[in-house]
Amino acid sequence: MQLQEMLRSMFHRSGEVPVSAQAPALPSHNLSFLKPAKQQGPSARQSRGLEQFFFNLQGRVGLSILDLAGASQQNIDFLTCLGHKVYSANVLHSLEECFGTDPSGQMNPGRIEYFIRSNFDYPPETFDGALMWDSMQFMGPALLNATVARLAEIMRPKAYLLAFFTVDDKVQEVASHSFRIQDDKTILVTDRGTRRTGQVFNNRSLEKLFGNFESVKFFLTRDNLREVIIRR
Image 1 (cartoon, rainbow, N blue to C red):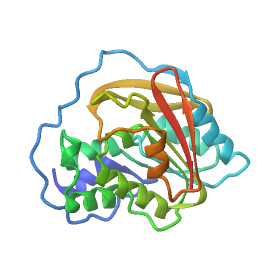
Image 2 (image 1 turned 180 degrees about the vertical axis):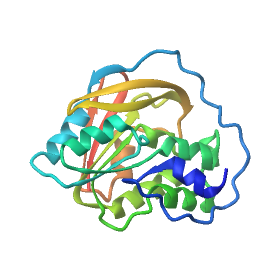
Image 3 (image 1 turned 45 degrees about the vertical axis):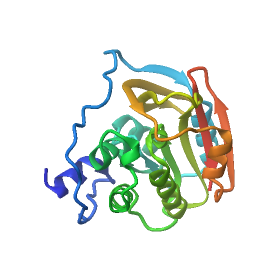
Image 4 (image 1 turned 180 degrees about the horizontal axis):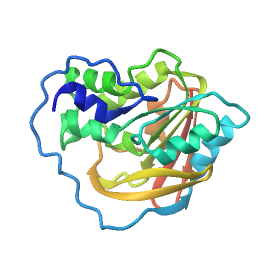
């Protein structure tokens, strides 16, 4: 696939396609490394993190929201109906394209730079909110630190970031999901199989990871997810 076509498949930016960039050579790898999920429809569940995210945006319109779950029409419709602008990228797909199956391969500086440029190529202080969902837990330390540093640049002061992490710090593989917004406190969750985690996450490590942000707030769920709201 040509680079321009690849970037088109990774992005939805209000109908715009990003300027193509010269990518470093990527390894050939089998992208079918996910353990297949059982065929079942999405399940609805309450999300305190999502509720807090929208509560913090309440009473404002015309905000710029970055959704990293891919170009979900349901998410776009929900956010635009609130009067906001939506920018989307599929971070999990980009991880597969750039790094393959193993988070330990996410240390190549050239590929990290390409990944950041492909997914977060926005001017400073562009966004009032960002939905990372569960994608951060599949990043190794070098890539994750670069991603958080870039998010700090493109998010406005007092902007909010929502991210999900597993609470089990002993597993090497965790469930991956797709997330669709049903309402301001409910998400539709679809199982996408399992992936290798990039590193161990706990409250202390996450507070350190977002040490340059103003605050970090945790919500624990019944399904072993730690929902985290981070204020820029």
